[in-house]
Length: 136
Image 1 (tube, one colour):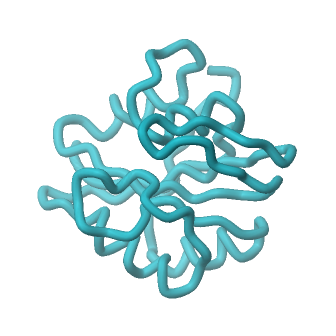
Image 2: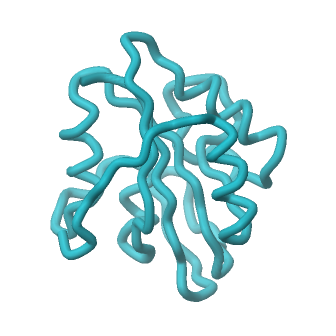
């Protein structure tokens, strides 16, 4: 199964986080929606993000060291659609510039807002819910 996904991440407090080459970024206590793709194994990629002990590799890994995944949405596809999805969210949600988009021309792949705003905008995308055990 290949495709794209959205991780809904909750940060419980305001914090500065060092994000690789982006440097130190201030994140407010809020909900964040990270858009990613996995063209070589969607389930494996999502499960990697859900693991607690992993090498810090992608921008989102730094954020996940401080936040908790609360929900995962996904869409199966044989073509990359993460930039299209990020573009749709960008029109409606504030973003963290440069986050998660070092391999494309998007302005960001990380968006934020309160719980209701994040979930209502993602639901408009008609993606499936990925069921996981929060104790992973």
